[in-house]
Length: 303
Image 1 (tube, rainbow, N blue to C red):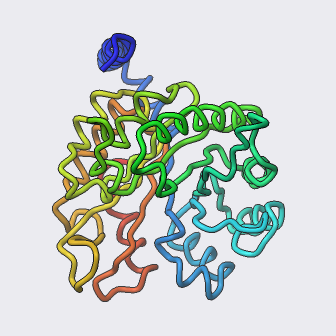
Image 2: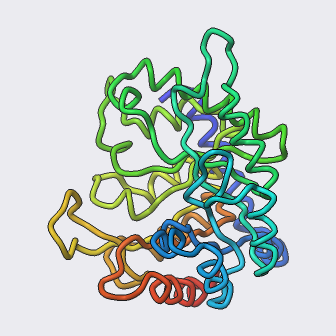
């Protein structure tokens, strides 16, 4: 760890400690800026079949915010940014964030600039009313080559600069490989944390995806205070069917991922403002029924 990194952690920790003794009205003000949303991948089959009806059902359940999981050909679920925002507005919904993968192909090294494809991605996110543009995957090359990953961290910073021109922020969402790949003694996640500028790049911690990797999410958040503006609130159980993963997501509080405790640390130390429900497996329930329970449980936890 570099001295600058140690100083950042030390200074941020001191700042966090100062907040802990702040008046209660400051906490109330901070909480008022928080939001609960649902990642639309949780209801991916429903969104594919009938996005409008699905969004209506999510609004009736009580969600006010959604996070998209599908953007292609300058459209969200087949609708232009303006059209999709209008649909959301009609149901009293907002889309403050979404997942669009920043790939190697999106950076023109010769021109030292982004391709039009990525520029349009950011522009369309702003048109749709988003606050956070979140990349949720990495090219295979970046996972096995330290120099490539180190260099691409600079591209993350530049994406943060581009997003800031539209009043948005850029973030990265983890899966599990970021913690298991060892590149020159560092995990991919450590490289991202070390070589991205906190003022330009935040991390969206997926607390379900990190489970089973050996990494400690609470320690990661405490050692990097203020960097986790958004989190995926997700619980895990043993996989009910054979597959690549040993675990699968479940209704919040039903698993063993320590989700409630991790969420609390994210709220108190991580700088988290967006608490996004994501459930990808349902144990016999419908996806809509599952995310309805998730919302009720997250609210019962005080969010």
